[in-house]
Image 1 (cartoon, helix red, strand yellow):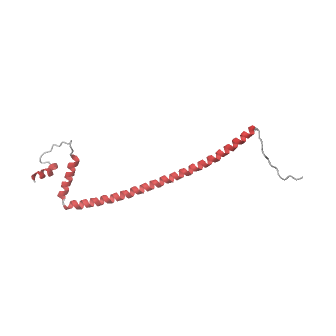
Image 2 (cartoon, rainbow, N blue to C red; image 1 turned 90 degrees about the vertical axis):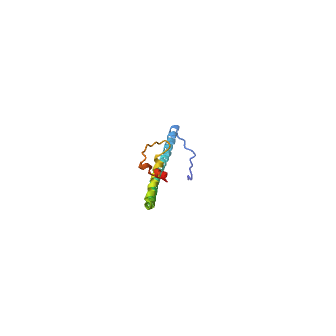
Length: 129
């Protein structure tokens, strides 16, 4: 006699043992899921850190470039103003005085000045003409 095949259809455990087997299986699956979640969280934090670092680098480089351009433009404007105003210093003084009038005088400002005040120099000269 020869035994060729044995098939087990079902193993029945006692209810108490069966519940412990199921609990162990559930705990094992939870442990594996927790491991994958923690690895994913770590990778996520690493990627976010790299993104923040790259963002800061790009922003600082852009700020530096903007400041360089602004500095060059200010220097060019100053050169042009100096060149223009050096041609006619009296006109420059006139423009600066008008700008001072505009910034210091408004509808609610009162000034008490003498007639020979330097502040009113150009207003007086316009009355003569």
